[in-house]
Structures are given as structure tokens and as C-alpha cells.
Image (tube, rainbow, N blue to C red; front, side, top):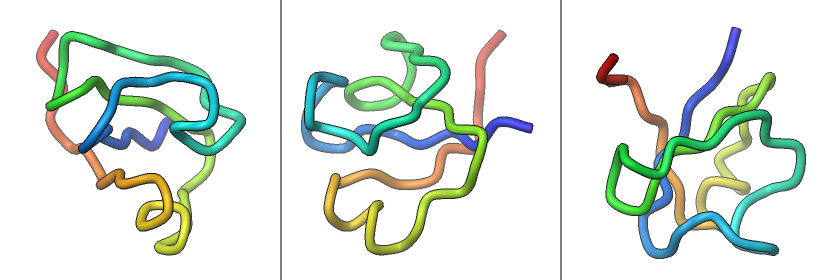
Length: 58
């Protein structure tokens, strides 16, 4: 299972999201969405200005 998160303030770049992501879709969300194989902590979401993403257009 993948856990998706939206980048709220900046696009995916070195140091702009927690390490270990497995996929990126730049065309979704405000500045793209990022997938992890684990849930991120509330602290990680706050530190990196991200939020859970539940809608994927296919």
C-alpha cells in the first residue's frame, strides 16, 4: 500500500520532503504528490508542509 501526500508550498526537491519516497506525480495537487510505503508522522507533515492526499486521477 502506498500513502500519498500533497506538497503544499514547494515542489519535490532535495530536502523538501522526508527521505524514502517511492513515487512522485507532479501533475496532481498544488505542487505535486509524493508516495511513501509508510505513513508519515504529524511532525513530518508539519515540518515539510505536506498533507495527506486521497484523490488520484487516472
